[in-house]
Image (cartoon, rainbow, N blue to C red; front, side):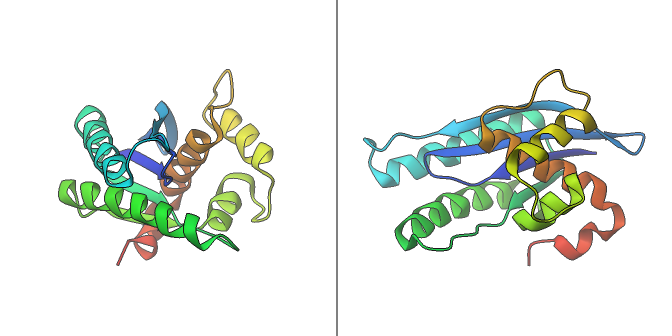
Length: 164
């Protein structure tokens, strides 16, 4: 099974692809989709949609997992990132109905074993779990890989994380 993980963002949207091989996640690729603030907001969303569609046609994932958004303060950021997430979800929903989501705490718990782990702890565990020579960079891509690994480990319990 091939899993595409997505860490939503407007300026930087991370993505990571892993395969489940013999019950273990195997690293395939990672990267980011970027847009610039000097581009009009609607065009940034169009660019994100186009780039997500390109990822889908390149990697042909069986299942797609999103990190849920968490914002404590900045409402404006929440709306723009939410719009970018919505565009990515729409592109993915047109591709498959196998869409899942996990909170940042669930991802940290699955990868590190502690829901309040620091970002560098998650990245070090990813490096170990996937037997990588270095940590996926930038952080947004590492977060997306972590989401994919979380889903890979969810197994039969993954259905409870299906987007509704």
